[in-house]
Image 1 (tube, rainbow, N blue to C red):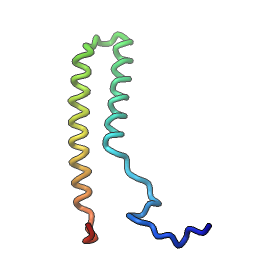
Image 2 (tube, rainbow, N blue to C red; image 1 turned 120 degrees about the vertical axis):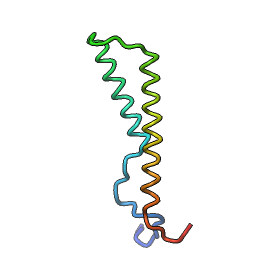
Image 3 (tube, one colour; image 1 turned 45 degrees about the horizontal axis):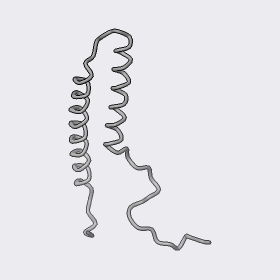
Image 4 (cartoon, rainbow, N blue to C red; image 1 turned 90 degrees about the horizontal axis):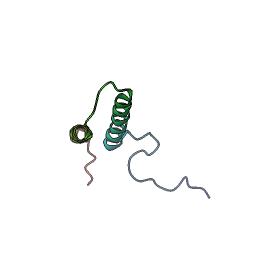
Length: 84
């Protein structure tokens, strides 16, 4: 079956999609937890689990808000086609 005459909708789908903000933030959370566990197991510092979780949640919230604002700002700068 020849699909060359089927019209495509939307922008060019052949390129790679940029990394999503949420994916990057969750990846950083996992890396931070792994690093904190390693540091705690080595005995370099004693960590309080409650404070660690509060700090990670504050950092993740800030990263998600800033990433969303930057993403919206980038999206607003793209030229519009006049279609809604």
